[in-house]
Image (cartoon, rainbow, N blue to C red; front, side, top):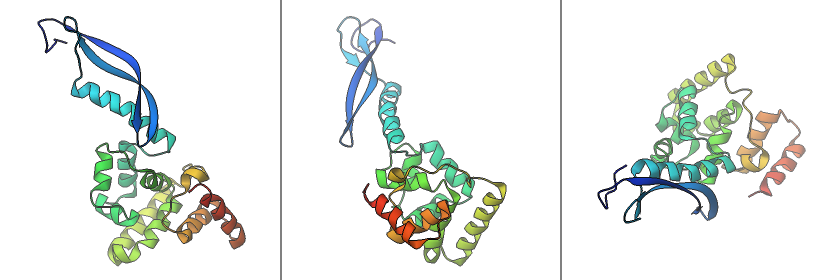
Length: 201
């Protein structure tokens, strides 16, 4: 790499660093170039992306947030558009598109994107959004879900632990999701589990 500061080469430097992201500190390997003569340092777009990705990936892993590719795969495998998924999940305009392009979801939206990998949970979201979707779109999505369930897709997908799974839109939604996942019919038990989830809010 040629140095932009002098007629010489620039040396690639890698060193341990700490960065703060959303109020939390993350350790990562910082990469940059150093001019052999002036000792000035600089980065490239590629190195910037590499540095930031390390931090973002740690955050995603910590909170069980799907990667951009995983989010894209979820939408594709359910056979719906980004617009329809936005309606179902109650996200803001263009949020999912930004997530696919690399923006990191907040913890609430990240949790939602994580739990809908389970087809039973996703179906509950679809049922709750029926009026917003309209009958035609609703029936089509339900057909897609039935087809995926028939093929065995997602039905056995591992669901996040309770403290990560928390984040549904309402108590009723959480109870329905728990019931769908765990096959629990005892309402008292469902309320107890919901209380447990509340302790992580």
